[in-house]
Image 1 (cartoon, rainbow, N blue to C red):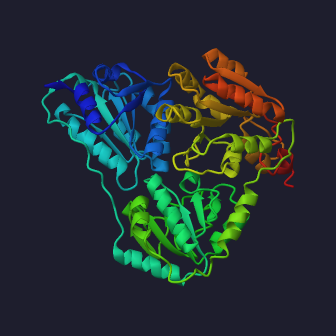
Image 2: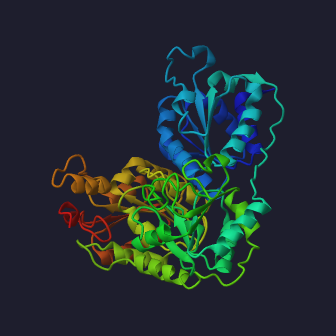
Image 3: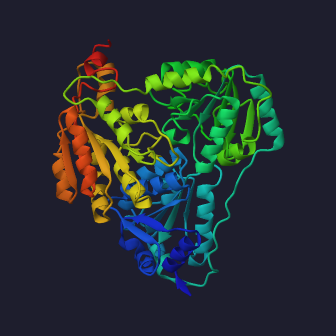
Length: 549
């Protein structure tokens, strides 16, 4: 006989869980007590949204479900931001929520929420346990659901009495991974389509990739001389300096790349969904009938034909697909072989940052410095905002598992993600990028980095405004500024107040020595860049946007 709390922890251990992220609550004290005697590492966070985003980063970088525990009511609703990210980004996460006791349900008891209804549209599966003896069953099923097909978040509600009551249950067993593989007929059909094509293009996206799959994709690109783009915030799926790489298929796409995709006669979409952002509002690939022949490879059959009608649908995970197709070779030198290097040259030109701009701090030279300074395995995280353009456009990713950024466009992600990444990979450099508005959404997780001695470096690009919203505001309603000005703290002083290292950059030349001091400090650090709000994009000033010039 074991308590429900013990059964939860046993099931997590059986499924290979080595760490969890949580904000403690009295609603799941029995689980916390069971964790006391468990080898599972417990990372205590400062707000449930940050904890859920750490779990998302864990799932994003490892492919294994990130595990998060929060308390009922406001704890669960705070965590919903991270669950929405995991759902839109197809990341495996399991959120456990302490719930009111069974006898108090449907009385609007203290902090009571119906989680099946609340999370129904933003989670892959939501369940409330009403029999402690079934805990091993539900937890193993949660792992299977979170990782199979299109990965996503699972939410498990835990009534308090289920966790404290004693139950006799079978020993927990690990879930059985589910793989979807392409058939030979589908591979033959794809090979024929490629051999007939004149202007093919490959777009990589989604999850369920690993380092081996990325390497195999490189082999395929080389064998077929294929131009390859990565979907929005999936840049770690292909080496940006490889001659086949054509660029980021995301927000603010290179016009030359957009033209190449629109003019392609065959698009091979592997792993991604090609949603609103990577499709440029469904214009690169028209929905539901693309102008190009479309071969869509996806692990979830429900995604095939959901938005686009494909010419050929292949129900397979990216890793299984590239493993199966890697041995196929073209019948002759592809007719497009000479065009692929031209697309790569256009990418290199597009991803070379400008040297000048308004104000005393120039982001272009800063990005050039970071590209030279950071090793290939450095992990870069960010949330959302115009500042992220500098990272996505000008950082040239070289390796898998080096990027954690929400395709859902959620602010506040970068700092908690950096904490999780550094805790997972302590030997690697981890750099978080955040705007001033973005940082203050979950910046309190900097305290978590201090608590666990995780020397992340947070680069806060401070322009004193909600930059993306101001940009849109000035474009649509020129000169009518409302609700986008910010009065910020001294971020460097804030870092020191938390027990970390702080630096302030007010001139371009200040950045390199400030960054090096932060790196040498061995402490979690904030490097604040005080950027002129006129420098709203790499190529246009706020005044130009306001004047529509």
